[in-house]
Length: 235
Image (tube, rainbow, N blue to C red; front, side, top):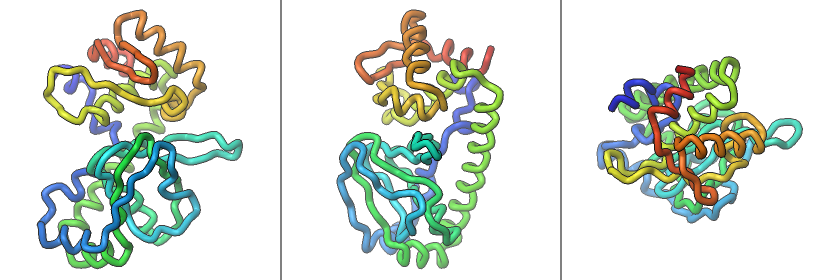
């Protein structure tokens, strides 16, 4: 509990699984009556920046990365979506093209909900409207926090922060005694942190030498959360 008190994960972590959590069964059935479910391979694109949205996506299994490409074709990951998250709805609500892209970080099962079904339920459901507004407000707060982090914190602090966020994303069973394994490539981790791959490899090696993490291939296990929180917060 002490780690959570010292590191308010909600300030850093995009979460949209609460939008449809415990949603009224009749409204959920209307929302998903025409959904189609597809299995995506690792790296497979779900939607691309500047394309027109035709519906929204509900992540049933796996992980998805939401990212933007810069002028030099370098990828910048904005956030990761996990099981239960609704994504791709922002462009639909604003009636604009996608401002980012999405692809599967690992093999993922994703439901596609057509635009007309989503909007029909949205127009008739005060609960869905409220939850979407609440989540959009939360996303703005997280974006502002992350922009501040990029401007004020060094790479080591940013990497420690992202590892805590990823632990939350990959922790499918909270309150268990088993350490959470974070499975992510060093390239993707570098794109999350906003630095070069070489910097991530070097800092992770230092964390490992200090007993903060254990690594095996692409998998990272956090061994000392409190120390990681201290680094993340500059304590």
